[in-house]
Image 1: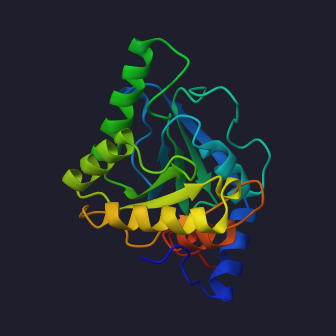
Image 2: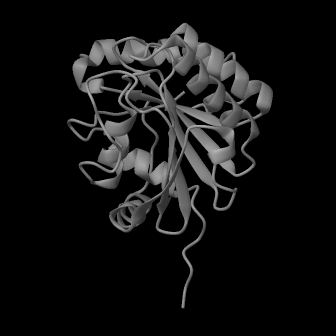
Length: 218
């Protein structure tokens, strides 16, 4: 496993241009019936509550409020879909685990997320965010097992890396490497990021852009 993918400058620049362009809200879904019909390929951002999904999406797109951020876990209460330049759809999923909401509401979010992850035909990859301070938890392993069973490709992204020292990050990479070796649908590389410092953001942009439809000419 490589804890920071080696990506060339041309790919990084092409990704910068893609993410600097239009990124428009399409729909929000709180039930399966509200999911937009499959169209463009999708990349989903998943993770436990308060892992930093919204902050990461905002950092990737260079926007301050594309995805809503909050210090209160569980504020994202629906799957939010964004059209990235007419070439890819980004899906921001509700966090699993702790949420400041009723248990019934949290269970409903979890059911919707799992239904989406296992049954979305246009889903190219899931970016499974892991808080670098906490590592892989039981809820993360449950999602990984479900994605393995559904044969959905996913890649682990460590967030909040600025909170750890270099030695701690190296230990985290070793722990993640040992875990993903057990999972059939997991991508072998992880990306270590910090929305606050920008670490790993350009590399993650390039990886996501590599899944986008080719740019239309003419």
